[in-house]
Length: 267
Image (cartoon, rainbow, N blue to C red):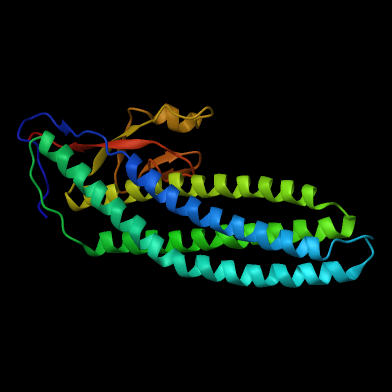
């Protein structure tokens, strides 16, 4: 694709490309539904097993063995469910991020007086595959981390002779933690994938500079990212912040974006 040049002497600054809120909501809803289904299943079967093997003494090993076996079966079932769902969800997410990012960049270019058509380049495919691979790993980790924590809670509950009500409260609290982690994954990955795909498209257009834009969101913004707001950086290298080269949206929970700069004829 030919390098873009502004039709004037002055450079053209494009509108910023932001992560799509609709996609975030849809992706988070899919992850949340899967987590909710796992939680409901664990709660149902563990309650049934706990009532059947209600321990009367902490030193009684039989309830622990029975509950451990139930938990192992549930862990295998739900880890398999997440493992199988992960590739489909990851492909859905990556494809939609690409479509929405391309559409937003095309609109920004059109607003700036340019008309382009995008194709699936090798560089974009690399980003797509990396995004899919990262999503698969993160989705599977939601189940593995949750199941590991629940198993530990069940065993400690039996060993200490706590009642079913206490265990149920513990399971509900753990469910809340896992839901929040899934929401963080959806938000963070939406930011990161959008920024990565936008950067690849910028490079394919021959755009070498962009302006860092802080989101001004969040209660505890990174000071370095806030200080970078409005500064120009090299699209290929990024900006040197906190001892390393980085880009908007790359760091965990970073909501920063960028505005591509198309040089004028006298640059």
